[in-house]
Amino acid sequence: MTALHQSEVSLRLEQLTELSVALSSDRDITHLLERILRAAKSMTHADGGTLYRTSADSASLCFSIAINDTLKMNLGGAGGEPVNIPGIRLHDGDGQPNMSAVAAYAAHTGKSVNIHNVYETDLFNFSGMRQFDEKYGYRSQSLLTVPMRDHEGELIGVLQLINAKDPQTGAKQPFSDTDQRFIEALASQAAIAITNRQLIERLETLFESFVRLINIGIDEKSPHTGRHCEHVPELTMMLAEAVHATDTGPLAGFSMSERDRRELWLAGLLHDCGKITTPVHVVEKATKLQTLYDRIETVDTRFEVLKRDARIRALEERCTVLAEGRASDAAAIAARLAEEIASLDADREFLRRANIGGEFMKPEDQERVGRIARYRWTSPDGSERPLLNAEEEANLKIRAGTLNDAEREIINNHIAVTIRMLESLPWPRHLENVPEYAGGHHERMDGKGYPKGLTREQMSLQARMMAIADIFEALTAKDRPYKKGKTLSESLQILGGFVERNHIDPDLFDVFVRRQVYLQYARKFMDPAQIDEVDFTTIPGFVP
Image: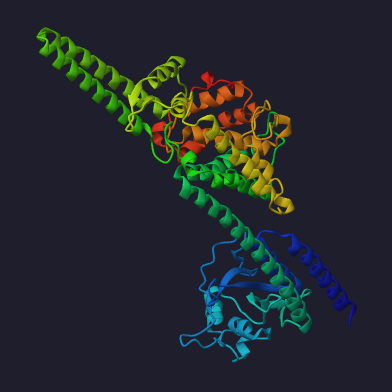
């Protein structure tokens, strides 16, 4: 072996070793494929090369990347032009293996094909290559075609190199046996690397699909929380990207890799997975008296009984006064009845309004509920009872929203369940923070949140981002059964109030407003009628 040949082999071994290390760490499959092809070209001093990938249905070989130095051609890959070359069918119309195309032959047989001059052989159909030469003024000569199979023998693709060149003179020459052995070794390593990358991608896709399956389950229980599970991760990522792009202020040092982004995205998708255990009648409680049905209708029936009894009493009184010859008193009885019926109707309408719930119930309205509750009515069994039982009275006195304390505890428990569910999974290292990110979105900066009562310093920045996203989505959502979606200005006013009360992170809120993350989200998900003008100077907790 000449000194020059020894040097060339040593260089190739070094290239192969470096590529092996690189292949094990490269996570972008497009970049991975391009790296493989360029390494093969460099190793053999080839003028051009093509990398074929097996189609999804395994029916053909698809052009993935094509490079040619002489023609300055760069198709596919990370920065190349789009590939518009038709693929190579692996079988003919009768289902027989296509053995006339050299790439298909290598794919079927698993053998490399090393041709010294494509114009001097009739082993394969090179009409397409000759047409290519004629079209581009090129001259194809030597060709090396190597199949890429994984450790189980499954075809991954085909690597094809064209026109080996003498490194000293640049003259075209055949691919040597040494070239072939090195490219076969490279193709074997490449196939394993591609398979590993595909396996990782499929597992990640499977896992994310499983996460979405959980959200579908939640959506089936409650279409309202289903959209919440979709929108919160979107808004969280919008805020995270805005913070990533910030180069001034206290958050200037925050940055994300693609792994960090995926970790946060999965946490967003899973942030409410514990709601799959929450009873439907609590999640969907649209009114204060709703359980499996809205019990306001039962209260309506009792009012009808009170009105019936009032009419019966009035008729009895009218009969008495008429029998006693006091016809003039009949008009007074009718007036009192009308007044009593009107009062009962007013009380019933008041309870119907109170049943809907809202952001704040006045103390005097709560007192009125208590007075109405003490009305007496006769039940079907003949016993006299208060118009509202203790549980109904307590529900109608709920100060904000529609949930009583016990139901709110059930709702709040979903985050504890979420944390338990997520902490039970064997997370890989690059996703190990998912439970903390997802489990912290109900914590507060002052330590008065739940379930752990963490302070700002005890929470990751990502969990604090999710807290803002969770609140803003809930404020603006128009599909909740118990409220209307708020406008942008109203939502920012409320969110700013949370900043002043040390509920959410002020630095993140500053980025949220200053970089108009709220507007980016609104244009994508909110009703245009909710998107109003925002006056920065009036937002609490924000300094323009």
